[in-house]
Structure formats: structure tokens, C-alpha cells
Image 1: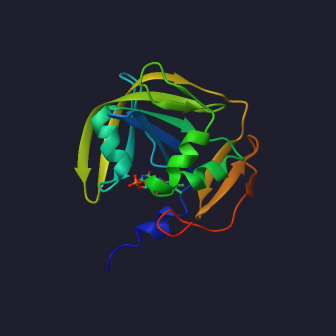
Image 2 (image 1 turned 30 degrees about the horizontal axis):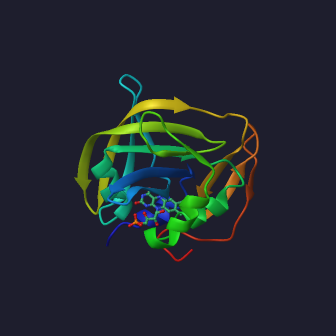
Image 3 (image 1 turned 120 degrees about the vertical axis):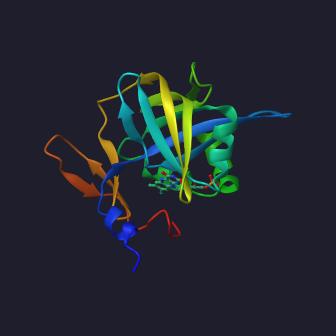
Length: 180
Ligand SMILES: Cc1cc2nc3c(=O)[nH]c(=O)nc-3n(C[C@H](O)[C@H](O)[C@H](O)COP(=O)(O)O)c2cc1C
């Protein structure tokens, strides 16, 4: 019997990030942004982090072509942005243009206003099962500790309100393997 990996991982709370990258086309630079919760911290010296993408992801193809990406860690209240940017690329394109962003100086990727963020260059990539693990060298970083953080667990979005770890339910159920 296959282990119920998804069932177990649903109980593991993560932050929620928007990963950004771009593709240069004859019509100019086209930015993309997608919701991810696979951000991992690997090494401080040198500074390395990782993201993990479905191998079929169109965002991943753009990231591996540009070799650069950024992640913006969403604050509580930003769950609507997370939901919109978890849709397929054609459906999220309009939402990417509505985001309040600036262009990262080191990566060229978009950084969302009011977030903690990292800019990265691709250092390594590993094909692992049905996913690709991308290891990024951190080129620049900034943080905004004033805001409570958005948390994803049991298929729903929550807010960590203070250091006593009070969490509130912000949404109904929904898992990124299911329709949102
Ligand atoms: C909370 C949350 C976390 C997600 N994390 C990841 C992730 O780490 N890696 C991934 O490939 N997709 C993740 N997804 C799914 C993507 O947001 C998106 O649906 C998918 O990448 C779209 O595929 P595309 O790049 O081909 O358009 C997540 C979705 C949600 C709602």
C-alpha cells in the first residue's frame, strides 16, 4: 500500500509565498507569479534556499530559462492573492498585472510590496520523482517583521497573530491538489 504522504503533509504548517520569475519574448519581458509553500532554508554560508515544482509547471520552465527568481512571503490577509496565483498560468496572468510590486535589482523578478523577500539565482536543479528541486543562491534579502504571517495547514489559510501562536481560520477547506 502506498503511504498517505498527502494526508500527513496536510498537518504540516507552512508559510505561503509568491514565487516570481519572467520570460523575455519578442514583445518584451513577461512576468509570472505563482503561489508556493515549498520554500526551504538550506545553508547560511553560502546563503542557499530551495523551491520544489511539479515538473510540468510552466512557471518552472520560465524560471529555468531566466535562471532568476524571487519569493515574497505573504502576510496574513493576503490569502486572496495566494488563491488567485495558484491558478493555471493563463488564469493568473491578469492577476500578476494587478499586484503592487517593484522589480528586484539583483534578479529582475517582481517583489510584492509589504512582504519579506529573497532574490535568487539558480545554483542547482535536481529531478526528483514528479518534481524538480531548484536550489537558489540568495542574492539579496529583506524582511518586514511587523506583519503577522499567512500560514497554510489542513488545506486552509490561517494567521499567526502574535508570539503566543494564536491562529485563526481565514478560509474554508481547499488543497492545492484539489479545485480551489
Ligand atoms: C498554498 C499553495 C502552495 C503551493 N505550493 C506549490 C509548490 O511548492 N510547488 C508547486 O509546483 N506548486 C505549488 N502550488 C500550486 C501552484 O500554485 C500552481 O497551481 C501551479 O504551479 C500551476 O502550474 P503552472 O506553473 O504550470 O501554471 C501551491 C498551491 C497552493 C495553493
